[in-house]
Image (cartoon, rainbow, N blue to C red; front, side):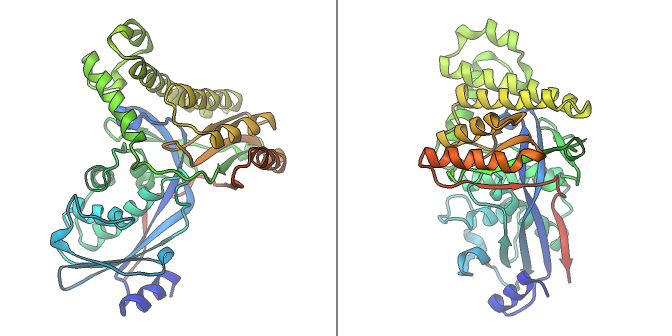
Length: 378
């Protein structure tokens, strides 16, 4: 019996009917463009969130987390709708609402995706629950359906205007590959992500400057893009070239212009990064990572001192490229480094953080991992 099995029995008094797992993610490149119909290139990490679920014979929903002292949160299914107050449990409840579940359930959550680190712990939680419920109730939703439904839950129920990337990669990722995702139609292509054979490693740096996407900063930037789209008379920023943007600059406020400039140039960087990976041109990939960070720092203004120090220290230590990842305002950075320089890079970042009186960062690496899956079914 697994740990989550045992905890479920101890908490609810019976065994779960199904256990699903879904991973967090690192976005190699393509930040803040999923809600503009862009291309993104994330991969799933090894860290996963698990959801154990059992159907009840009433309309009660009981949810508990192994990370929160197994305190049971109980609500009636009829009250599960946008506007219901709550904390972390809003994420699994948003999935129940979005999938249209009309029978009570017991749910236990466990996992090891770092919270607030920009590695999409929220999408891992949503997708593990969605995968379990989809199979348990034989709903028949495709992975694309589940991505859209979990995004809808986070947008409309939780109130975070996120794009579609995090849920898509958590559901669709494949071992050994980054996922080139077209956020307009959710079509995908696996792109081999093998840096180890070239003596390289992707170092993930959790700055421990924990972020929240519910404080308005994310929403403000998305609103700027949507305002610019309306002024330019286009469906999305995907339909805009850099030349067209420059020609239309007078139609936009300065804030709108720099936000859109990031989106347009970042979309191009994603496609160039795919070519760099296919050609094993890691020098070019590193340059694209650097350009992405500068754009996120200067045009989208979603970086923070800890992220900038992590990136700068990594580059000084010899990284081919580095950038912040995730929604920003904290979280993690990645650095493409020579594997032989891992220890030196970590020491350089730690020294820079200490010199700035920042909280000590955490470091880990991950190979591209498998997306959501059922790991146990009774």
